[in-house]
Image 1 (cartoon, helix red, strand yellow):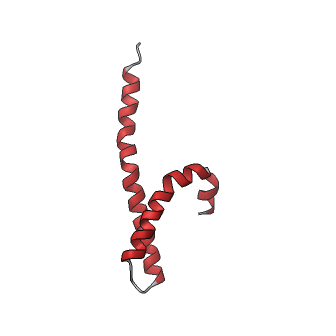
Image 2 (tube, one colour):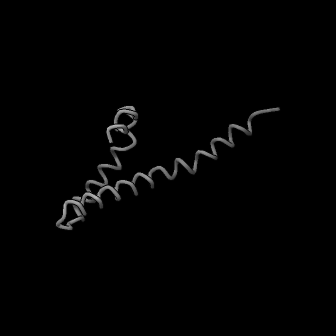
Length: 76
């Protein structure tokens, strides 16, 4: 966690991780009542991972399309 906070610029960390973190936090707070801190914490982290992965999916799908569009415009 310490390395994550040191390696990623603060602005990028806030823009990319804060929305997913807040959504996962709200979901965990409203729905996860396992009466065990460990289980609730683990469920929160899994929820955050899934939300972050789903948010990253469109970026990964569009990245190859953008790469092909720029390569098509190049003349030999």
